[in-house]
Image 1: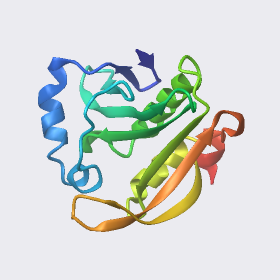
Image 2: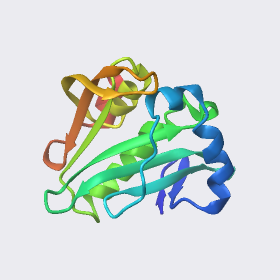
Image 3: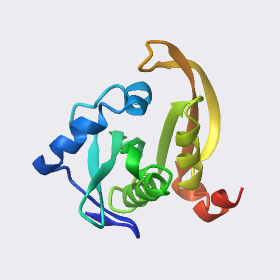
Image 4: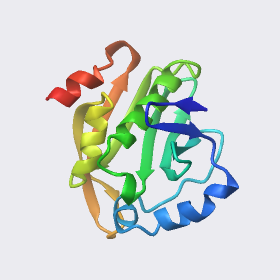
Length: 166
């Protein structure tokens, strides 16, 4: 389990299932995060639980390559919890954990260029925009979209506070 000022990040539980079902029906999630990952040894998922005990979303560290010391991170946040800095805080906590006990050295975060909210989350969590990937991923509308690739490496971590000031 991980703790942030706004939430507890813990392994998913059966009690989260109804809230997860509701989240995956949200139009923004359907559009920008249409596929669920099948749990395996290359992924770790945390449920985001706010202080009143309410499920607010998930953060998943996926495509974990322990030999290469790298992974990717993704997240989904309930509509009622958006715009509060919760996603960036939760992503940053998972990244810090990955750089610590998991001994990873690089994390990537990608999102559709049109998904400006995800771009803000990446920046607030300290990720640097590294590239635009043309026609890189098919999203919920069935079309290929350009993506931003953000990266964060252990030796070159951006200061999240500095990112918020930009």
